[in-house]
Image: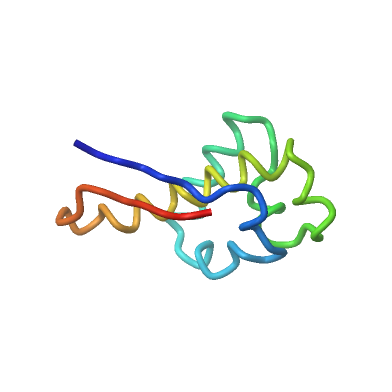
Length: 87
């Protein structure tokens, strides 16, 4: 069983995905999610200001994407089966 619990709105801050996107695999994954939802999540996770990423239409896909990137990192070694978080 895989359990995913993602943080809520308010957990995003300007530039919070910068460290993640130095890794090509994470940048590629976020680009794919961006294409699927029609929002430039790479830009919003790196250069957008606080007011922009506070907008629910941006914040929700951005936060879910951050959770998916975290899940990818945690499951990469094949040892973790559950992921949890608190908003």
